Amino acid sequence: MQIAVLSGKGGTGKTTVSTNLAKLINVRYIDCDVEEPNGFIFLKPEGIKSQEVSIPVPYVDEDKCTHCKKCIDICQFNALVHTNKVILFEKLCHGCGACRAVCPTMAITEKDRPIGKIEVGYNGDMECLGGTLNVTEPMAGPIISKLKSMIDDKTTILDCSPGSSCNVVKPLLGVDYAVLVTEPTEFGLHDLKIAVELVRKMDIPFGVVINRLSQEDNTTSRYLKDENINIVGTIPFDRNIAVMYSKGELLINDDKYKKLFTDITHNIEEAIGCSL
Image (cartoon, rainbow, N blue to C red):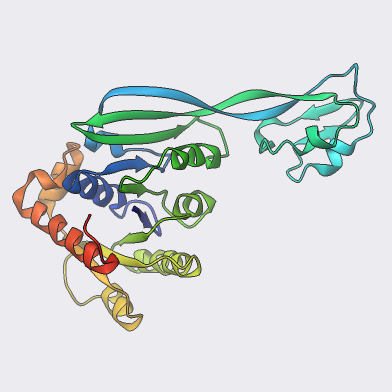
C-alpha cells in the first residue's frame, strides 16, 4: 500500500500531515521533496546511512570521434553542441544514453556525475528514507526514482514535493491513494484545484485535509462539497500547533492532536477499504 501526501503549493502542512500519519500508524516514510526535504526534522531518525545518487553522462574520446554529429542530432535536451569538437553541458544531460547508442565509432563512453544523495534511518522500528538534491542541480527525478525503487510491499507514505510538476508526478506513479493538503485561502484553493486535476487525470483516488481551519464554512469547503470531494480531516488554526512545529515536534505527541490524526487515519482506511 502506497499513500502519497501532496499539496498544490508549499507551506500548507504537507510534511506535518505525512510525518504524523506515518509515525501514528508506524509505517515507512519517504521524503520525496528532495529539493527541500524536512521530514527528518520531525521524525529524527537514527543510524542514518547515506548513499550517493549519480546519473551517467557522456565522455567523448576525441581520438575516436569522426565529428559526424549524430550524437548532437539525437540529444533531445540540447546537452551536446559541436564547435571544433563535441562539448557537453552536464546539467542539461538527462543521462538517457542515446548519444552513446548512435555513435558509429564507439567514441562515447559514460561516467557517473553525482547529483545528490539518499539517506535511510530509523525512528524506533519505523524506516525513514529521504533524498536530497545537490544545490544548483536541476533534475530531481533520478533521486525520486531511486527512492521509489526502494519500496516493497510494506505500507509506505510518500511526502511529495509541492506543486504539480514532474517531481510530483513521479512519486504519484503507482500509489494507491493520495491525500491532498490545503489551507482555506483563495491562494490555497487555486493551487488545490490544480492538484485535484492532476490526481484525477492520473486516476488516483484521493481525499483532502484542510489545515489551519478557523471556520467550517469557507470557499475551500464549498468547492470540495460542490466537487463531491471527500474531506478526510481538518486541522485547526491553533497557535500551539505552530509552536510545536517550530520546535520540530510531532503533533501526535499531544493527545488532542493525536485524536485528529487518528480520525484522519480512519477516514483514509474507510476511503481505501483496508486497514493501515
